[in-house]
Image (cartoon, rainbow, N blue to C red; front, side, top):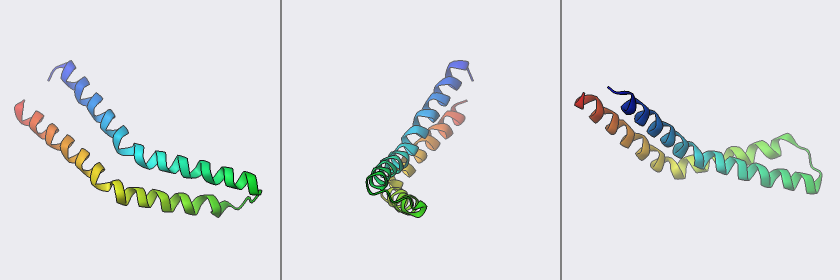
Length: 87
């Protein structure tokens, strides 16, 4: 296994990790921003007000984007197995 092949596998793994984590992180950040703006305008400083909606939004995102994430992981796993068998 050459150094270029190892670097390609690591780069591909890093890109796929970003693709898998991006939907959940973006939804969490957007919901957090909206809730913090709401709290700043209404001056409500309740901790559960920011936690519960983010938790619900992240869970819904995982449910909706779970198939997409699983397909990315399965494609990468198949790629790695093909790569191992060709060595």
